[in-house]
Length: 79
Image (cartoon, rainbow, N blue to C red):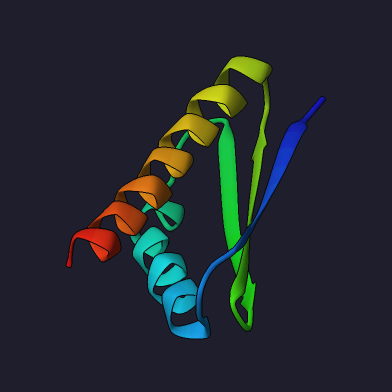
């Protein structure tokens, strides 16, 4: 059985969506056991999909990706 979560983010601009989605790519391309993630974007919206083999792996992966997104937005706000 697989478990999944989808997060939809609407940000201020298409450029910001591209920057955050691109910032996540190095993590998404890593081969992490039990989890898979993908990011798609359209305009000023990007979608993070996370799938895992068990709930605890899903929770851990979601927490990591959400923290990276939060960090990227915090950097933008401090510049």
